Image (cartoon, rainbow, N blue to C red):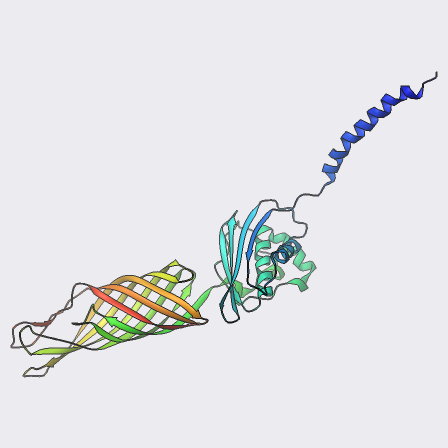
Length: 337
């Protein structure tokens, strides 16, 4: 039987269309899975790696990871003073959290940040790639703040973990201030206070000692009275309300005072010391002028829990009695370490 070439044409065209229809399906089936979407915002001063280099480091650490859940990350590097740098890393989604890295080498800090981001995506993939390429580990940063919250997963091998120093954010400080006191002395007195404390994340605790050397009062309408001197020991607990550029804290304090009175213009000299405990609330502001130096100021409302009356024997009238509440302030310099 003879079949002309024109009779064969429909079959050839049909086969061509079928093949053309199958090609996209096969191509889609063979296409590799899309990598996890990373929304990365990067801000850094001159001399730091560009954002593409940070992205490349994250991709290298993840390798062939098939994790697909999107992640939103913000990384900002700023100078704290001199060559000292601070890197703030914030993960907005899917599990919010943040870390702070301090150091002198921006390249090492950016690699550490890339490692933290990659581990929050797929720590198992990071562990595999770290084992395969141990030389690519980032240099350890000097300090890192609160760990990023995330789903509980088994810890990766030691080779893939961030340095131990990256798991803490603890800062100490010593400070010296001028003290202005109105709460426990007859007239506004100026003295000196010194102390120190620690800061961890949003929390700060301080201990201090101080003295207001001179203040005076007398019985109304008479020359007789007393000179007063105030010593105190204080403990403060503060919660941070604002972080940058000023650190602003809301504080509660407990203070033990010793108020000494010495008679003035009296027939018989006398000395009396009264212990007075007081509680207070207020605010503390710190401003870092150059690492590690800061200016600090505080203002508190103070209320004594007891109010002893100072009198002169054989004379009517009160020399002094502390008010129900008053103000206490300080301003000085702090050295962080």
